[in-house]
Length: 602
Image (cartoon, rainbow, N blue to C red; front, side, top):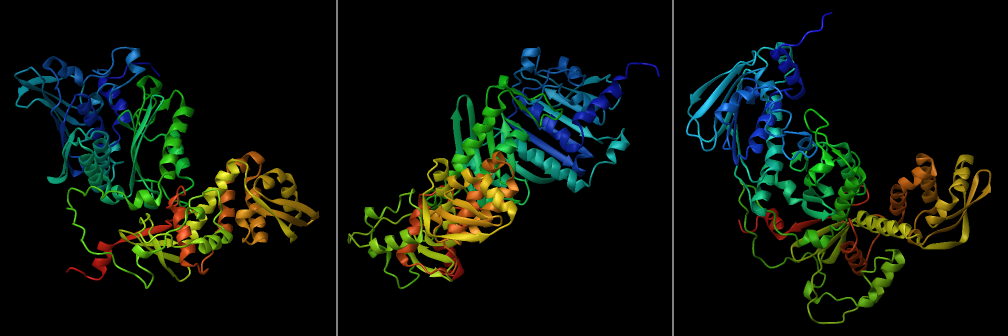
C-alpha cells in the first residue's frame, strides 16, 4: 500500500466522527461557540429531530468577513494560540470551532455580522473540499449557523441515527445542560415550529430557581437543598435533592466544572459516597452542582467530546466534593425542613395562597398551648445518650408541667397519638406530622453508634448470664480472628467449643435487642467483607445492621411523653429525615392539604 495524504474533505469527515455523532453533537458544539462569543440570547430551531435542519442564531460578537473562511478550516480556532492557553483552557470550545467537521457532513451556511461592521456576510459549504464563497447577506449582530441534511453524504452514519423523537430528546437534553450552565443567557428552543423552551436570562436567586424548576421539575426544587461551600481555592455550589427524592435512573444529575458539563468517574464516586448512608439500594441522587477551581489545575482536553476531565490533585477534589455534600445532607434536620421557605413556583404554575385558618385538633389530647413543658434536666437533646427503653421511661416519668405559658412549638410538634403501633401522629404549626417510629429510631441509634465507634467509646454492658449460641466452625474462627473488632463494637464473644460461642458483653444501646440473632448478623457481615481492612471500609453497614436490631419495634405502644422524646431526638440527629436504607422517616401534611381532602373552603 502507498502512503498518501488524505483529501481535506475525507480528513474532515474522519475528524467529524470524533465530535459529530448525531444532531445533538452539532447543537452542543455550535451553542458552545455562541457562548464563547459572548452571546446573551440563543435561538435554536430544529426540524425532524435535527436531521433535516438545525439553525442556531445568537447575538454574540460575530465573525469578521476576513475570518469567515477560516471558521470552516481545520485546526482554526479563536480560543488558543500557544501551549500555555491549552494548559489553562477557560473556554468551552478550543479544538477548532468544530465547524469544519460539521460542514464536511452537511450543507452548512454561516452568516454573521461582527461588531463595528456595517455589512453582514455569509459563507456556504456542502460537504465538499473546503473552497468557500463569501457573499453579503442581511443579518443582525451575531451569528447564525444553518445546518441542513446532516450526514447526507455519509449514508452509513445516517443509518445509525434513531427515531426523530429520540434524536430530538437528545437535542433537548443538550439545551437543558447548557441552559443550566449559563443563567445569564436566554435560550429559545423550537421543534418543527412548536415552541419547547422560552428561557429568559436569570440574575436573581428566585429567577435561577424558576429556571431550574422549569428544566428539572418543580418537585426537584421543592426537595432541593442549597449548597455553597468554598475552601482552599475550590468552590462548590448549587442544589442537591434530599435522599427522599431519589430517582430510579441517573437522569437528573448535572455537574459543571468551570461552567463545562461533565460526567466524571471521580466526581460520580464522591457523590455516591456522600449519599451512601442515606440512599435506598438501587436509587440515584438528583443534583445540579457547579464546581469551580483554577483552570490550570484541571485538564479538560482528555476526551474528544470534553465530557471528562482530569484533576491535578484528584484526592483533594474528591474529598472536598464528598465532605461538602456529606455535611450538607447531615445538617438536614426536621427544623430545616419544617421551617423551609415556600419554594419558588414554576413559570407555568402560579402559587396558590395558603388558607388562613386556626389549627385543627386531631385528638382529645390537651391543646398545644397547655401541653406540658419539659425540664432541662430531662436532657432531650443529649445526643450522647442512647434512646433506649430505659431512657424513654425515664423521660416519661420526668415530664412535668413547669409553666402555664404557651410553649414554643418545636419543628416536629407535639405527639397526639400512635397509629397501629407503627406511626406517631404529631401536631405542629403547619399541620400534621406523621413519623415512622421504627425507621426514625433506627436512624437515631445508627448515628449515635457511628459517633461512638469513631471515638472508640461504644458503651458496653456485661450480661448477668452469658449467652451460649451454636454456630459453625467457620463462624467460631471469624469471632476469634476479629476479636478486636468485636470489642470495638462493644461485644465480648468467646469460643466455648468447636461450634459454640459465648456472648459475655453487648453494647448498652442494644440491650433490648435479640442478642443471638444480632451476633449472627454481625458474623455474617464480617464473613461477607472478608479481610480486616475491607471490614473497616464497610463498618457503617455493620453498624446499620446493629442499629436495626436496637431500634424500637413496630407494634410497641409508647406513651405521649415517650413519643415526644423520640421527636425531640429526631430534631437534633443528623440525617434523621431518612432511615438507614434511605426511606423517609417522617412527612408533613399541611392544613391546606387537609382542607383539600375535606373540600373545606370550596
